[in-house]
Image (cartoon, rainbow over all chains, first blue to last red; front, side):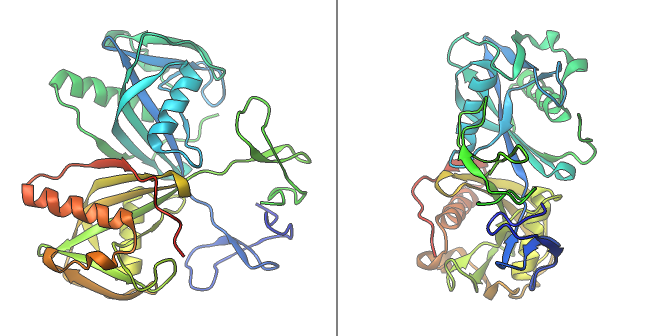
Length: 181
Length: 181
């Protein structure tokens, strides 16, 4: 950020009075421009015990497999965001969403929120951001080709919990993942 | 938003190619300025079966009671945000955080994430944003003077679960709360 989005003057970086962090501050119109973490909402879409994955058509990690997920938008709930992303990336409709993994990624200021879910039918197809979509049995999951640690971790929890017959929500933090390009 | 924070030129509102939502777009430097929901992280600090509340010294809802909570910052985990806010608002140190309520407020593009927690000792005091801090027994909670529906809802779940001897994480959406000033 170089310019104030409110008045167009140059911003400075300083600790505002009463604060203890550096912020982008416009000294012309006295606006503090806060920056906050973003939420990535997504789902584990399940149909006949198989899990729907998407092969990414976009960077980062183009060509790798992921659960459908993306940035939550203003004016929607987390569930709506997860349903929207699942439809956009995999043309699949999901229901019975249960919050399953909540993952802080402080080094990139993101919070992942992924839901267990059921596909309403067996219909799916690649959306614009996917090269391919496919239902996988547990034994066929391409573990070496999963795009992000958040996704492989969520899938591992899911299959582990399923084999034990009880799902439990996980709130974890991943500190080491690098920004991938 | 009127001006591009990257180059200072005026932005326009339009649906970018390949998108389906209106965004602030800079046609001078081709930057799309996305806006996303913000996370409010906070805690239910418990000491000897009592819950610590803060009387707000700031708007909105100055003079009303709340659980300590505030905007999550970049480069922290949700737990760290909840611990930081609890210390800033109530000068209390908490541990053993367990994610308890996750609440979408789509009309104001916020997501609340509140944790059950234990105070490490009985020490607390009002921080800069609080007029007063106090430990409350369940029977003394000032229900009519709680600042936000997210907080009264979380407190109700907490006492209900505690009386039943088992806590369960809640993910809910609140659609009707108005922006309070």
